[in-house]
Length: 414
Image (cartoon, rainbow, N blue to C red; front, side, top):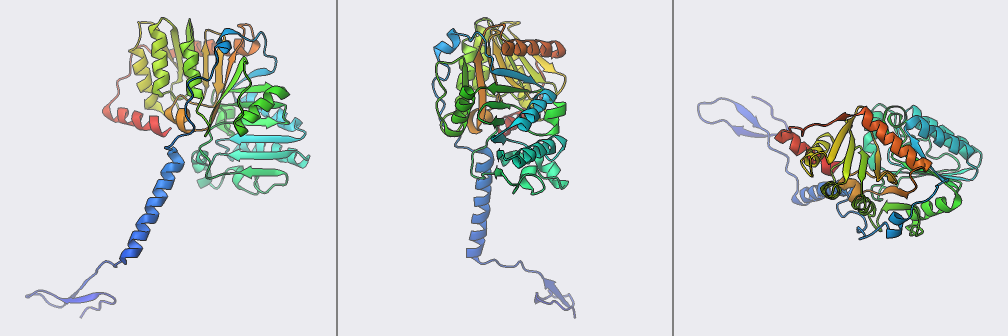
């Protein structure tokens, strides 16, 4: 006879022989079952809330850029400098950190344990040894993009004692309850800010095309810190306006649309990811009234591929023939810049996606300066060079149903 330990024995039907074992599922008490399901549901809801922030941030104001901003350009903005691409930007970051005397505040979305990430970490530790107070704020959701390194045993320096955590004079802030903070900036000694689109990782330093901004002077640095850290209104009137998305207000999309709606001759956008419907409609309005629209997107973005293609198709089909030209940049461009009429610029961290426009903390600077201002002139020349290096899109892309679904998903996820 078979032995069926811990199982119920049952006799076989007639014309059968022996005994067989029936394995019955373990019964979970109903209260415990409900508790487990409640815990699972709570975890899923918390994860959804953490990733997507469905309630968004603060409300979108009706106006961000005052009429005086569009009417009066600055003759020369000596405290403003445009940094193009990683080698230039990270050289300036390292130089600034090395010269710091009292304080450094770093905010970033991604910080990898690679050559660039460790070099910045070592420079900050050297500053801390000199007595500089270092504060580091890193968004936890950005850690998703570091998972490959983490699985290889290389977590971000912000998480490890061999990196920055627990180091004397360095305070690492990883607030799990904070809203997604996609902004990237360094505030040094209350006298200089470096901010823009670049995270701290090799691809931003060595491979991708992107922009950062240097803002010098106590007046502007204090205004920047007060705006992003405390929500203090930006001083007005001013040829520089810092728009911020945070829990108080989401200002950046309003300001971008105001910028496009006020354009008279030309709008040039260079962005990595573009799917926000309100900004798309603003470009369509501009094209309909005769404003030339040029859009530069990366040929092969790291994410948001099909969402970008849907935007391309819509814009190519809108407005008079020749009013919208779209160019595919040959390498990965992580840029977030806009230039209208050759004199009004926007540079920052915000992508043209619903996520950046509505649910992520972001920082974008709006500048109105004379055509010969060095900052404006360099941005204008760089955009023209990028158009010349890119391939013009001559017809809409044919997308399968699966690709259109991926476009919709990518639009809302990224």
